[in-house]
Image (cartoon, rainbow over all chains, first blue to last red; front, side, top):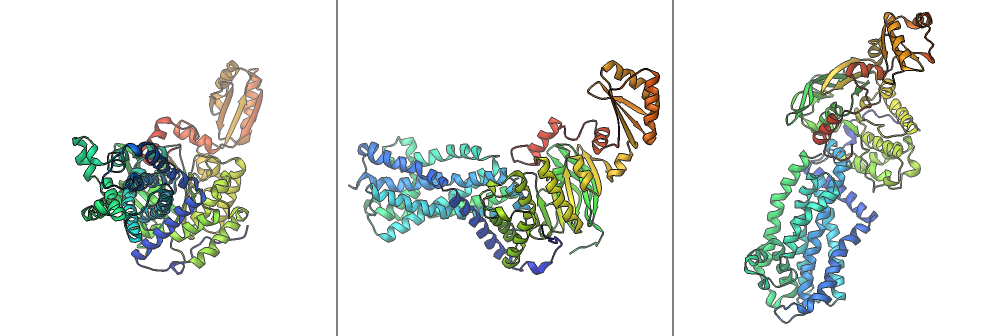
Amino acid sequence: MTATAITPTGVADRPRKSPFYWAVADTKTIAWRNLVTIRRLPQLLVFSLVQPVIFVILFRYVFGGAIKIPGGLPYVDYLMPGVFAQTVAFGAIQTGIGLAEDLHKGLIERFRSLPMARSAVLSGRTLADLVRNVFVMCLMVAIGYVVGFRVQTSLLGLVAGMAVMLFFGFSLTWIFAIIGLSVTNAETAQAASFPILAPLVFASSAFVVVGTMPGWLQGWAKYQPVSVAIDATRSLMLGGIYTNNAKVLGSLAYSVGIVAVFAPLAVRRYRRAA
Amino acid sequence: MENAPSDNAIVVEGLVKRFGSVSALDGVDFSVPKGSVLGLLGPNGAGKTTAVRILTTILKRTAGRADVLGIDVGANPQAVRERIGLAGQYAAVDENLTGHENLWMVGKLSHLNPKTLRARSDELLERFDLVHAADRPARTYSGGMRRRLDLAAALVHRPEVLFLDEPTTGLDPQGRTGLWQVIEELVAEGATVLLTTQYLEEADRLADNIVVIDHGHVIAEGTAADLKARLGATIVEIAFSDAAAAQRARGVLTGLGEAAVQPDGQTVELKSNDGARVAIDVVRALDGEHLEPASLALREPTLDDVFLELTGHTAEEPTPEDESEEDRHGRTRGAA
C-alpha cells in the first residue's frame, strides 16, 4: 500500500459551477449508473418484455378473433398501441423497485451525505428508465411488425405516437418513485404497484373497445390517463377513424400534470426517506 | 467558512432527536478534537447511528447543537457534505458497478475534477488493495473487500472528517484486523474520525477518546484507560469445579475487594485496586478455607467490563426493544 494523504487539497479540486449545472451533471451520473446496471443485468430487460409479449400472443392469436373493432383494420393494429401502454406502465414499476433497492442497500444514505443535487437521484433514475423504455418500445414495435402490426399513417406518425407513449411512461415513473421511497424493499414496491396499475391498464381501451364495457365502467375507461395515451397513440399511428387530436393533447396534458404533481412530491419524499 | 475557529472538528451539545414520542438522543454532549479519533460506544439502539446520521446531514435534529468543522449541520448542510466522508454500516457500494466505477460515481457526485478524480481513485484502489478487482462488479467482492471499497468511496473527496458507522460489523476477524490497520494509517495522517462500534476491542485499539451512550444518554466518557481505571486496576478470575465452592469463595474473598459470582455459576471475579499482590491474598484466603480453584487468572479490565458495569448488560448483547426502535425510526432499511 502506498501512502495517500487524506488531508484536503482544498477547493481547487472542485470546479465552481451553478447549482443548475450540478443538478444536470449529477442527474447524468446517476442515469449512467442506472444504465450500467441495466446493461450488466440484461435479464431485467428481458423480464420487462415477457409480460407484454405474452399479451401480444394471447390477444393476437387467442382472443383477438372474438374481439370486434370498428374501422375495418385488423385487430392487431388496434391491439399494439394498447400493448405499448401496458409495457411502459408496468415498466414504470422498475423505477420504484430500483429506488427501494437503493434505499435498502444504504446507497441513498450515501447519496444523501454527498454534496450532490438533492433531485438527481430521482431525475437520474427516471431519465435512465426513459432511455430503457425507448429501447423496450423499439423492440415492441419490431415484435408488433412480426405479428402483423402496420402503422397506417407515416414514419412521423410512428415516431410521434412512440414519443407520446414514452412521455406518458416517464410521467408514471415519478408516481412509482414515491412508492419505491415509501416501502422498505423491492418486493413490497412490486406488490404495492400492481393494484394501482391493474385498473389503469386493464379497465382501459387497451384490448377492447370501451363501448363494449358496462356503462358504469365506461366513464372511467374512456377518460383515465392510460386510455387517453392509447387513443392518442392510435390517432398518431393509425389515423383514419382513430384520428383524435383532443386525445393527443389530452395525453400530453395528463403527462405534464402527473410530472408537475408527482415530481415535487417524490423529491420531498426523497429528502425525508432513509 | 468557519465562524468560530476551534480545535474541535465536531461539537455536539444538548443534541436531541425524537421520533414521535421516542427519544433516540436525549441531550447528548461530546466534542472531537481535530486529528483525533472518538469512539462512540453503545449497544444496538443506543443512539449511535442516529448521532452519526445527524452529523452527516442525513437526518434533522430535534434540538441542540451539532457543528462539524465549525459549521452548523442544519444551517449549512451542503458545506458540511463537501468536507465529510461517511462509511456506513451496510457497505453502501453499488453491487453492479465495478470498484473503479463506484469510486468514479462517488467522486463525480462530490463534484471533483475528472482529472483529479481519476488519479485519486487509482491511488485509493491501490492503497486498499483492490487493484486486482478494480474492474469486477462489486457483487463479486468478499465482505472485507466491500468494506474497503466503501471506505475508499468515503475518502475520494479527501474529507477532513470521517464518520465510520460500525465499520467492521459482520466482518471476520481477519477482515476486521485488515480494516483496523487501514483506519490506523488514516489516523496517523491526521484524519479526524468519529467511529461508532459495538466492539469494545475496536474502540480500545482505535479511539483516543471514548463516549459511551445508552438509551440516548452519555453515560461515560474518557480515554480507554480512564474508563478501565474506574473498575480498579486488576481483575482476578477464579474458576471452581462446582457452584457451591464458588459461592463459598465469594464470601471469603469479599473482604479483598468487590467479588461476584459470574453468570456461569462457577467463576468468581474479584476487582481490586491492589495490583498483582492481591493474588497472594486470594491464594491465602482460599487455602485457609480449603477451597481449591480449577483455575486462577489475573487480568486488566477490558472495556467489556466497563460496559457491563455502566449499563448492566454487555455491549454485544442487543436489547430487543431498543433494536426495533432504531430500526423503525432510525432507518427504513431492512436487515438489522
